[in-house]
Image (cartoon, rainbow, N blue to C red; front, side, top):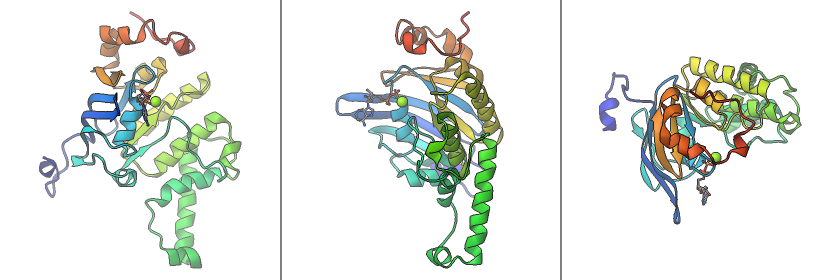
Length: 278
Ligand SMILES: Nc1ncnc2c1ncn2[C@@H]1O[C@H](COP(=O)(O)OP(=O)(O)O)[C@@H](O)[C@H]1O
Ligand SMILES: [Mg+2]
């Protein structure tokens, strides 16, 4: 199947990301139980669902951190199911984590440069001897890192340790690091978690600017106001099962979605941006 899309001289007509009937079992727990969706260049999709629904597990399968127990993941028609995270990243798939994974002791700039080194051609001799080529590529890496930190709107000190930044700023650094990989597809796991209202509005703007670069976005997010405003399509998971897939308008009206959300987790959703009911 992949061979058709990969014929020499033709552009792959298929989706950038194609998730087909994904399954992940942990012993008896069906963490992901039949998830299918696809994303195209510049798309913004959201995966929503109550806590424990299998959203992060699905991301972990797509990015190679977990090996799915069933189904397929294709990137530009290439089957990457069960491939290593580095191999999947090399295909232009980048991600952030629900719990921040910055190197707290490293400077902010170094955290972003660390993302970039994966795709830069350097050899040990160049690095050891600080050859002109090495210095040139280091200078270029710093420029690029600064560019992405500007892009995400980082205000704090870039030369100091990442852990000294306030939480919202650290989340921006993580997105900058993911962008520095030059992804075609970026997966964001709860990017608005812990952000204040102003920061959420800035995030909304940032997501739209990332999409305008042609990078497809798939986000896991609990803030329904943000999800409804930014998403082209929404996939809904509940107990690992996909219970809905549609436009924000379709999903908002879907009885199965209302049932999964209503009367459940009410308190933890109370502080969120209001969802319009109609
Ligand atoms: N490493 C793991 N080992 C065993 N069970 C796990 C593991 N990771 C997640 N789970 C279980 O899989 C289900 C889905 O979890 P998760 O994907 O984190 O949900 P979500 O991100 O939607 O909140 C939960 O029941 C969770 O306890
Ligand atoms: Mg999660």
